[in-house]
Length: 356
Image (cartoon, rainbow, N blue to C red; front, side):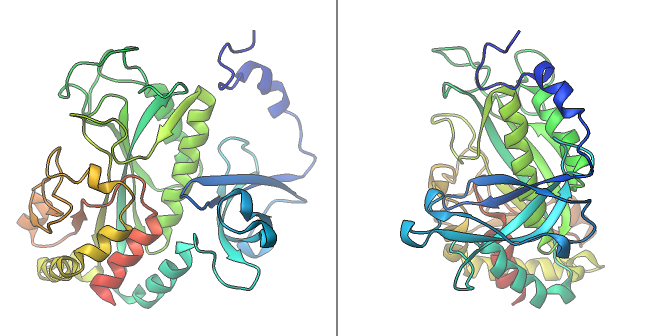
């Protein structure tokens, strides 16, 4: 029988078609970030297996339909930047991460990857590593938090964080599917956990060097949206998806350089924190819309209007992990970025502030 939920994939109907031979052709799913920070995608057919980025064509799309161009001059060009195995189609099929460019040869206003790549190139001698902790919330298609009682609320926060068992954990099958799909796609996904608010989860990507961080997080977000689509579930990256006494969602960003990772690196970490403090407003400006709803000084956040740091302090802007302080080397955690951030803007400004 067909699924009663029109938003949900019917795996039984689809299966025999996915087993059909592709006759040597390859499907390439081009993905990009649109005018409001959402991910868009479309597919093209290639004649053979792709062995290098240079084999992929520059493509285009209607930017007037994605808030990236006016209707009278609507072509926006997709320049392939990286590609990954496609966990949905399998075989030689791929996901192509693309940058958006205008027809006059300038990067589109939404193309923050271009500037970040320049910064990473300038700072590459420092070998900047990142790890991003992507929190997100799940919703039914009717807009209610997934698994919450209709017309009511679950019990208060407490048992959900890293929870195990019915009533504490929601949609574990969806989360496991996303994890395995990211591994198949060669995403450096380093872990998952249930978060503080019910039906809120987190996955971590990294450590990834330079521009790879933004690339891998973007593809991991795309894969999550696609997996959730098959379950008939919505993913929200809003930093305060559920108003009230519930934790918001962030994208905590861990950062280190070669100097920080060496013996005595704590001095380089402290120097970076001092620089970050001097540009707090500039960072907040690109750390996600509606972040003021999350950075209130409550629910494990520092206040948006103040810069602070501390060892093992989850209520600070910057946290130095306890083991880093003990060992005198390692990394820092910037806890300010919202869950909805453009990863290229975050990694780009951190490198710019601390290294350039």
